Amino acid sequence: MNKIKTKREIRQELDDEIASFLSHGGEIKDVERGASGKEHGANLNHNIPLNQEKQTRTLLLDEVKALDERKQSKTKPGNATPHRPKKRVIYDDFGEPLREVWE
Image (cartoon, rainbow, N blue to C red; front, side, top):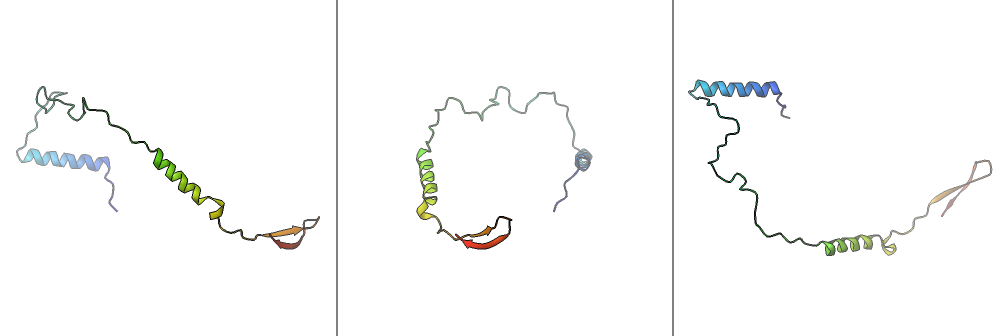
């Protein structure tokens, strides 16, 4: 099982990667807050579908009815298991068992 990294270990790995990047000639530039890598005027919400027709929904009434019918057919008395006899103990007035009767 893999050990879950702690926040300290993750921070140390990031610091090591940054140090390695800088030692190999990399440089970090300051970027204004809120700046985007998208071109100016590009649609930032291109994933949101606009002006599309409303999708029709499929009614599930027939499927639900079929499921209910299957459920009812399993619980019909004709499909039930045969009655098994049960043993019942008959007690006297003082709570002592007298005999056993099968019903």
